[in-house]
Image (cartoon, rainbow over all chains, first blue to last red; front, side, top):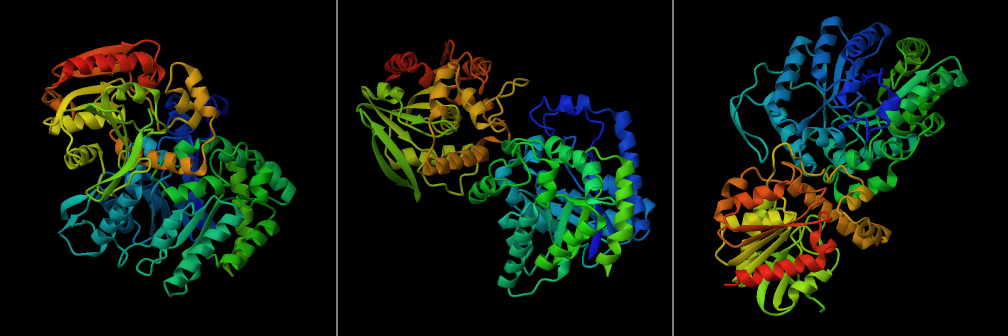
Length: 380
Length: 260
């Protein structure tokens, strides 16, 4: 199993009480609540943390993109990736991902990824996402055309990476007389593409297609939903007439280990609650604007939703018991990962060791313990 | 006065059309919320006129053709619709999104029209005065923000929609998003052509409109060549619902003067 240590870079100094007075920690949370002096320290600590994952034996380190919120301080994840490249030697660097529909010209994404691939001599993994619904509020991009823009941007980027330039690209949203990427990507034919997802059926059908076979990473969902979504992907691959390999199945989740289950809950319980109840707090109107999913998916989404959104307070117990967060002793956590592997063929685990207000000290202790007592079993 | 409902087909698009009354034609274009019910206001307008109330493509029981991607497309479709139905000397009335569509129709071709009535129309903006963010509001908040008099909101909030009505609400919301999300509820290329609407026009606005700010009313009056403005006191975004009698009386007086 491949292990990618993943980070969101939340703004921990957030005044949670003050933030709770606003509609959400996204889009409309006043940025006067951000203190650049404290924020700068956060960046420094988080980058150190990710760099250290190479020494601990992780296959990859991961960052991602979100806009105008306290949940993640990475509107431009490529900037962080670039810093990580300079401070690491071998570890893969996964940007999970860039949100394709919300840019005016996806060539910029193709170019930046190609640059990172050159800078790292082929250590880049490129995530393609649509962003979460709130991103359509904060960028103004019309969510009704989100899928259209995603597919068109994807096709443009892949073509720009793999076809000799210059050529022209005739899309509905993106029209370019000259596509001619300098630099071209370092990896051949192009860097690996991974698709993080909340499990939308449209995405499964598209990612599993034989032309793509993109690894499908289910993020922040209960054991039940992760199992269902990964198996839906497997079923879809079989419908297409091929057997997917384990490298196509990923799971991203908050993870914390301590000596005992009780201690882990005690140390990480409050932090996991802040992730889901404070940093991710938003109404459904922000989470799933119309068109972000199909009408059918949207109806199902409202019915099935069990991890994100306006579900009322989600306790640490609920988050742990539902398997949304892996929190416990090394033995417990290892068993849950192995169960997921047995049920789904999981081949990529993307644990997030720092979440919510969790301190550097606790996150570091947890990751050291994980590396010593869980990782060797998963790497076997 | 019960309305007659039928399906008319224009360019392979089925449109649900409600009609009532007899006389010169009045075409009412509904807002982004769709046409949830037949309103007392419609009865008042249909007295002495033939009132036509279509459900827009992408709304209610009408088809949702993929070729309609924005409000200018919608306006072009309605020009086809009016030709196909052989309508002429039409008084055009539009509310909110429907007002925007009406203006887009008339800057393109006003030959078959006699007048324009706009009720709290979308379509243009006043810089620095953003429209209400209908997309971020929750269901109750959105309903309350439509009205000045909260009793209207409370009556509507008490209704529990059926599964079928929920599907229509969702459909309407998707189309409203397609048409109104970006730029938010306006077309930057509309205002500069409003001088083309050389017809008598009436602009009606609630002074407590939380969706389309009442400050927009003056800009409409300024840009339209022959417009009169009626501000309705203690009224929100649906003046024809909250002040049905006053608004229908104003419109009927205006139409009498505008008949040609």
